[in-house]
Image (cartoon, rainbow, N blue to C red; front, side):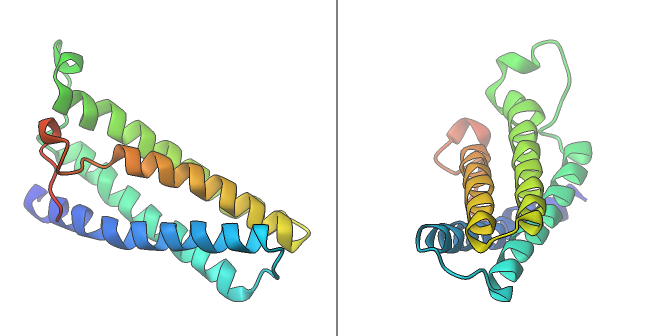
Amino acid sequence: MENILIPAHSGWRWIVLILLIAAVVKMNIGWKGKKNFTAGDKKLAMFAMIAYHIQFLVGWILYIVSSKVKFFGGMMADKMYRFFTVEHSLMMTAAMVLITIGYSKSKKAHNDTTKFKRLAVYYTIALVLVLASIPWPFREALGGKWF
């Protein structure tokens, strides 16, 4: 099962990143440029949130079955186990919460500028957390891969 989930989780991250980056750029442009919030803007934010939620669900299934998640006495001293067991999961959970709150708050906003601003702020913070939490290949101790 892990042999299927890890490539799926690693590959889907690119879709999530593309949608999240596109949403952050579009929402910041809309906010700063005082543009009208369109149905396309709402859809982009929603698709980014849905893609992230799918990634999050697969990630939590992986958390349960992964050989990189272990609970033992020296776990916090081992970079890889600490990262996957604690750091990655907590920061990705925080990002999911921020994306969900940002989307929800933008729906309740009464004007376009506030909608853009809420999405821009929440999605940008979430994107920073996501980028910091990915086991990139240059983080050798974590055993990350591009795909």
